[in-house]
Length: 264
Image (tube, rainbow, N blue to C red; front, side, top):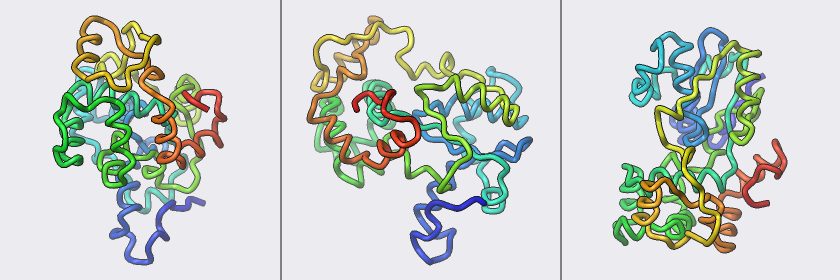
């Protein structure tokens, strides 16, 4: 039986329940297999949304990749579909790695999310002062931590108390094989199309980049180099993430152990 994760957070009408409403808006249907996929930003979500768009017959190939960005709600599951799903799955990620990825992609890249963060900070600082340290320390404030889907805690997206399969990004080949076998979903890699990641860059492991201005990191990336995600962290920042993303870390460790956590 499917049990909704946040339904009893309030006894008011379910459509008005903010936690359920948020989580359910990230539950997408794969129609051919009556499956539900919960997508979590920065957790291979472009790859899976692309794969779903092709599998659901809305696009034919990667040539129409950009269709997915304006159609996040197109495959959104309604309540009957959530309850009667034949198969459910999601992809989790090491919380430390996810936040490093957000920073190196969205903040360093001056994406709209960087400006959103500045707004959440009430323009206390200039965009070029958004070091990784400043980013992580800002997440101690709940309105900021939950103010953007790219760094919002992963547990907030989970519409079910239990999924049939949880995959971790750090072992994504397992997801590719399992989804093909169980629901005949072919995974189409979107990384060459999004160029969000740091694949192909020379990672710098020496030194620490917690307080390096984003324009310097941007210059490194333009030159084919990038701080290794682990090199962004200090002991203080590790502690901040450990405290404020505790639920994410506990769930990940319970499901996958600590072997693939950046810090354990």
